[in-house]
Amino acid sequence: MKIDLTVAAIPAFVAAMGAEYAWQRTHPVEPGTRAGDYQLADTVASLSMGIGSLAAPYVARRLLDPVTPGVGRHGRTLLAIGAATAALTTVGDVVRRRLRDGSLPDPQTVPADVREVQDELAGIRQGPAVPRGDRTPPALRRTHGALAVSAVASTALVTSTTWAALTAGKRLFARSPLDLGTGPWAAAAAILGWDFVYYWNHRFSHESRWLWAVHVVHHSSERYNLSTALRQPVAEGVTLTVPYGLLALLGVRPALIEQARGINLIYQFWIHTEAIRRLGWVEKVFNTPSHHRVHHGSNRDYLDRNHGSILILWDRLFGTFEEEDEPVVYGLTTNLDSYSPARIATHEWADIAVDVAAADTWHDRWSFLLRRPGWAYARRATAGVA
Image 1 (cartoon, rainbow, N blue to C red):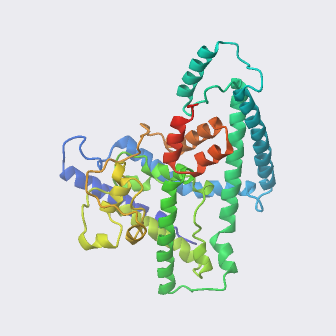
Image 2 (cartoon, rainbow, N blue to C red; image 1 turned 180 degrees about the horizontal axis):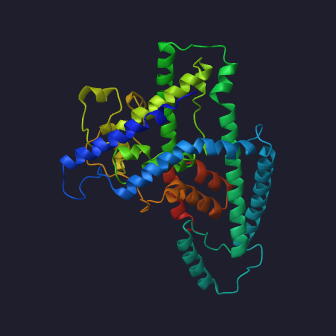
Image 3 (cartoon, helix red, strand yellow; image 1 turned 90 degrees about the vertical axis):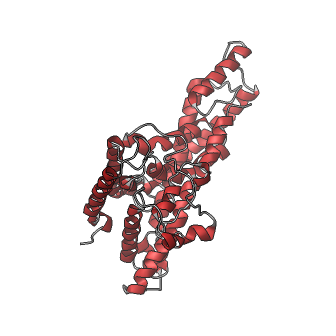
């Protein structure tokens, strides 16, 4: 029976959190001045997300396999839904453009100056503003938005599940002419290879809003302690990654790849603390609490930095390294003010859906999903400007 290393390490995680809490009690500071302290609601949210992340792969497999093309019997149905809703959305784009350009009769009878104020107020209420002059009836606009969300969501789901099925380690290892065996060199290749691929996946998770919607869970806490390490995503089954299965093509056995995953995650646990400050020469090569505090900072200079897991060398090599040199402000650039695991897990997905529904071009719809989160927020702010 295979043992998941992260599950086996749970008693050690709990013990380490207890030790960190005890250390905090013996090193008191002014109330509210240390973001590393434990706060009950925040800790419960983190632990809940950690438990959810353990169950998520099994739940996702049951939910997603039936709609994966080539795997489940409903894969073609999902493809058909995506094609149909995309076609209807495109028709809606044409109708809305004609209404906006005046090619069709104005469905509203209020004076133009009053309508402009109404449109502006509607845009403020709805987040992504309805373009001024858009005379689409509200019911048609909502229907059109729902079709757009369905088209984008079904296409993304088909893409992610198909990609995951095609790049699975077992599948690629069966096609590889290489086999590194189970010796120490093979284990080292698995760990180093996983760490390298992880760097790029982690970096892309900050550079694409689709991936960020999954990863943002881990950054949602305004506190930074060992419980934060357990605040893990639950929606990794509906994302795109540089496949770790590529290691299988190089001859790394799937069992070793899975063990490398566990080692990688366990290493990341201890760096989520303020109790350890600097570690001298170690920080030249390895990721440390100091480096990872920077990664969790919402300070302008700290955004999208230090993506490494075990090694910090990747960040130094690819230009994403930042030294810790000012107090870290933890959390998001706009925080949630919520400890609800459901809210934490879904808030970015909900925002993406709202943006996609309000967009009136395919370019914007896919950009809201695929481009940087910063682009989406800036585009949202200007969407109602004629």
